Figure 1: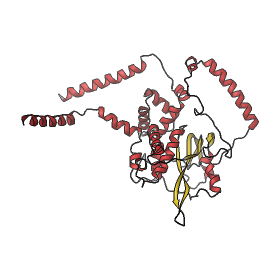
Figure 2: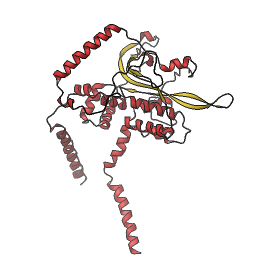
Figure 3: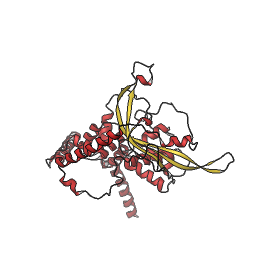
Figure 4: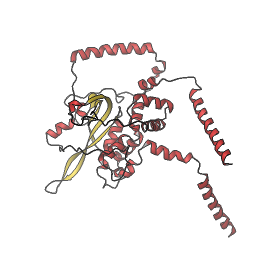
Length: 370
């Protein structure tokens, strides 16, 4: 009987997988992986961030395989990531070296280097664009030709590529923000070590940056709205590309100039200024600022801002709000963990349910006998 049950289960599972493939293919349409990379940048960026694997091609392939399900795509990417060897650890990156594509500050109107709006939907009307339903390659090529001619003219007139300093650096020069020595402690790698509490800040930031975008945003919103009332001012949002360097594994005695450039990654980085009350030397309350930090793969500014809020929350665990409880926050924002635990309820629970059902029947019988 056991064999029959297993055999029947195997056949049913195979039929289910075949039906899944049928549902994907039945409309006779094929979406190319490169099309997903080119037209679904936000989705690709989110999948890369939540899976801790920077590869637009693999993220797009996972999206195609998952038929657009973010949770399933992240699950697939993390599974693939676990099969890859760890060949190198990259050098520490100073984000001052970012080649900025977008840079804004909500704290200051005029910042050195200027506000760079870049590519964003922030200033669009959010109305349905029905012309997209009739989009053609010819029209797109004509628009691109006109746009590139304009860009080339602007670059010819300017001709300079500059790296922009951080907004907070100017406040530090005025003595309005504290300066800290670099902490060269080896960061925790949460992909190789189990998350334990209390967690180091490096572990917290890693968990936040690969947390589910919706979950991180929701908890950041909860804190902003009143559960902890952390209401920062965004000092700076940066979107751009960072260069990645690695050291030669067999040459330990080398300088930064000897490192090897292996590519670049696109990130969103946020530094938020959070007002706090502190005691001065006279034991009097005075206003000060702390910095909340957020960074994630690709262009995902909302998540990075929410992350900066939660970073500051978790630096103050004594507050009696769930958004300041690192176990509550860090254990509930992981998309794979959350989806897996919720989805496991679909799996067979025959034995446990029948046991509970039997207990209820016995109680009902005894109640009826009385």
